[in-house]
Length: 211
Length: 179
Image 1 (cartoon, chains in turn green, orange):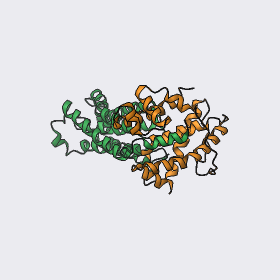
Image 2: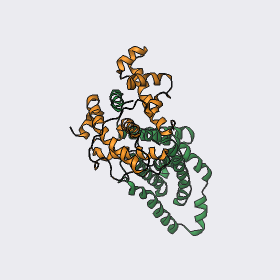
Image 3: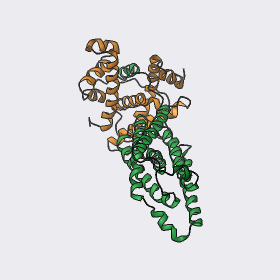
Image 4: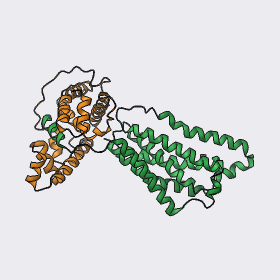
């Protein structure tokens, strides 16, 4: 095949699909929506959510998980562009872990030592580590689907960051049901569940995001 | 017109501008591919195959270029990524020239005849309808409309089959199935 013929034929191929940015936004919105529907069909919010909303510990769970999802979203969107070696948003990924560490430090200061372990173990750790990945599934699939149209330089890493977006969304949803509000619990089990999803994302990324 | 402008026009659906852009890029890619292959210690005999693979990647990934960003860094990133990929498939570490297309002098070697290109072999590996459509459009130079008439398909169906065929070709390249 002559290169000129190839070029001529490429020019006849379907004109543009939607810009990637819009697809990312759509994937995030749909991911949240699907996750939310699944959440309402399975667990739903805890019955005392109205009182809970007035407690700092409960609210903090949303702050940290949403900050994670949003910061990872901006980073992963850049990772779909081949020429971006380092997203300017990358430092933002530190925000959620730093917040969490501060919250843990505060918790350790205000809570007596004999309460540390019970709070860390909580009531529902197995449930928590299952349900967060479950609610993260749809967002992860959607993020990877958009990334496949992208041109990530590092497919595994892009998949992992997509996993952080999805894990953040899944964790924020689960947080509305979960009775364990201590940052000690969140830092342990939420982190574990999100890390698991990020690992799944990395694995899928290295398989399906090559181009 | 500058490349970025041509690309913007192409993304907006101007096929002529898009074609002009790819034609302007091809000689640079040719030099880039030949250089890269030589430096990696593999002959540059099939540089044109690499050029075609890069062009296909540019085409399939064109929506990853942000229209308000410079065009050349994007182009360089795609070209380099594909060259590294080619070298890796041949068991070479991807030692690709650090400088990209921009710095390379726009010397224009003529496009070689490539009737037995890798792409031809890959097209023959597509399945049924995709193969018919892609060879009609890319090899025989038929338009979408003529192809549709010839095959008794709707133009929409031809477009879809053609686009899927191109995607599949990129996958086949990557899998190195002609090796």
